[in-house]
Length: 466
Image (cartoon, rainbow, N blue to C red; front, side, top):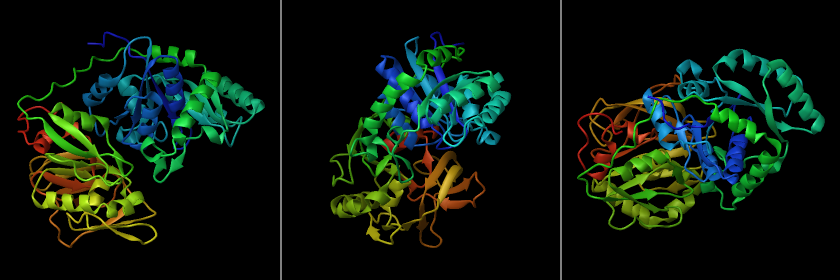
């Protein structure tokens, strides 16, 4: 059954990373929001950084759309739960890497576009070429036009001659429109930082907000938004999504300490929503700014993020380190991903060789590396029953870290991880019972019974969490 109301939507994709996708996506969202439209941003893939920029531009939490983490109908259901309806709405999906990258795995931006029937606009980076961009446009038309490619956006154009020349040749060769362009202007570029773009959580000077304000105004002036909105409104109906899951019954409302600051900012919004649906009252606290563990909480969550950039502040929060160490030793519920796990280990050494004491709740040390220590999709299989499910449970997640970990030889890991990029399988997963800490980032709504186990209730005996 098709969704009864229209869901205007569009994919802004590119030919590679750092090609202008986020700049255009954020600018279009900001400009449409200023027009009074209800806007919602989405990001293809497992990225944590771009979604924070799109959230700031739309002033609504951005969701990730990933066919590996959300296989089958889960992808469409996740999209439809957040997508606004009606002619005064826009759902903008930003692609990941190049539009066809990882299509051999079925996880590319183009795979998302086909699953969600997204009209597609391709960003072309004009910074180092002019008429030659027509070659890219011709190739894109040949490969993609029958499946939804609607036109192009030009990023980092020079003066008027450059813009008109590129526009003319791209339109002539492809037969598709150029909807607009952005100039080569450093003040419009998304500020970059360690591991990626500047985000609201790492933007104390509010430089990002100023960039988004300027960007929205420039997009309004230089992009044919009316034409883009007509394209978005031409999207065909989607099969109707499921209603949001009802809150679990019979669970006492549980106070859950949820780390939230510059060091712990990698959180899928659906993960927090899952806990709330199952009775959690999330209590934010900031390890970086000296907060202790909130009083009278029943569980603790430490998301990923940037502990390496705030290691000194974390070391100086001796009271919290002592509380968390005691919490783990008492066997109380705690879940930590990547940077959160790094905080729970004995120490962290940065790229300058400076060693900082961490919580010391689990045995191990991490050292920052200039190269990625883990990257891409991975599957996990539990080696013992615990917080994430019974022994043998299969998990889907992703890895992204620049640290290397050293742990005692023969440590009894709780999970076997197999990266999809060909890296060697390895052990991961500290903790037993209601405790788990690892490098693997997960969508918790795909882990059956996770919320109930963390919050102290009984996991369901049938169906998934959703």
